[in-house]
Length: 488
Ligand SMILES: Nc1ncnc2c1ncn2[C@@H]1O[C@H](COP(=O)(O)OP(=O)(O)OP(=O)(O)O)[C@@H](O)[C@H]1O
Ligand SMILES: [Mg+2]
Image (cartoon, rainbow, N blue to C red; front, side, top):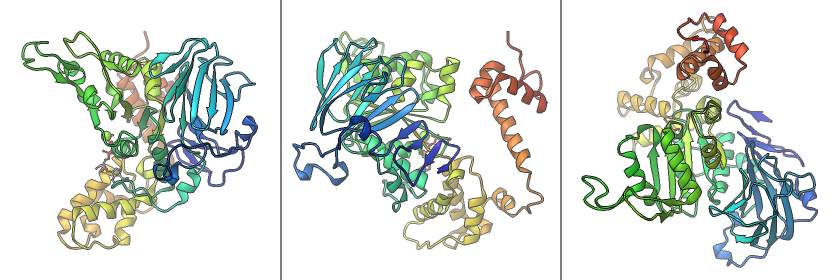
């Protein structure tokens, strides 16, 4: 199994009962649940014509179960009735405290899917409405059914081929270079997630390509012909934000000369991309949560609400789970947005992508000029860098090199000095690994203390380390009292 720190693990030799783990997402190879379901999966009836049914959608549907800890995919039989719940005897087991022992019953009849609340405590919700006890509702592939705080989506195909997808040739994903196995697996997953309506949370350091991935998710969805609206949550003006988001009616305030739709309405039928969602102010977190739950917006000054059909995709470079624990991000909103987590590994963990990315940016910067492969010495220097700014930093380095080189070849001389020096430093000069790790740890601790205003308990939560360890590290790194404000 190959693993990266970003939490992406990919097992190329999936055996029966083993899983692929992508961040907090677990994907079980097909057949794992066959025993549970007790029948072979035969292709379901399909009322669509072969033209309407692309090859990638062929095959029996699967159900994607998402709970607090992640997601699992289970193939469905062509026909049958399955119990869903926390109880041992259930056909589809969901490990979540908010799910009753027997929570719901799913009936599969070819492509016809019916869900029934089996007397659960926390209810079954479909299209924002809680079903009555024992009420049965027909729902479609891609629709999200909420079971307490967990959710399920039926997808039109098996998710058993991620390992194959990862081993395949680079994908064409609309301008993005996707060459490393971890990224191929991730983009293969994006393609499948796109087909459902589940909300997605995209995680990754700055410049890793979160926005590009969200674009791919939108393009691959049934919403592709409708708008993808981006809201930068880090740059919201408190005075304008409400009218920007929700729109307003004529005369709602001085200067409202005519009615105007807000961003949420503008995204109707499409996708709303909440970029830097970790920076969403608390008051707006509550309002966005309400829209996700009710699928309705109320313009400023309006009397009646309007329906909106929007898929929410959020992105952040922050550790939202830790923010939830600290109470700076609403837990309920986190679970609404976190239908599925798509975690992009930093560039330093996919070094094999540095050269194709550099050549891609070179070709873009010099359209019409024959680039050819980059000089191996240049590639070696680029591959040795740890890219804290990720792909964006690489794009800037190539852009600068192109300006300096004119139409000539890119040589070491056109690379920033810092990169060249680092690569050429003899091994004896290189900092010891332990020192380097220590420096990183110290930086992270300082950052956590700054963000928690010196509160050690909160900083320890952000860092994911016991408070006692944090106190020991503060002593070890000689961090001053100013950063070590004692708890009240
Ligand atoms: N795989 C890729 N192939 C080609 N270009 C890429 C790839 N990944 C990122 N880029 C480019 O790198 C730049 C940064 O990407 P993007 O804006 O998607 O990053 P981000 O994760 O959203 O960053 P931030 O957290 O700062 O918002 C963009 O110009 C984007 O086109
Ligand atoms: Mg971005």
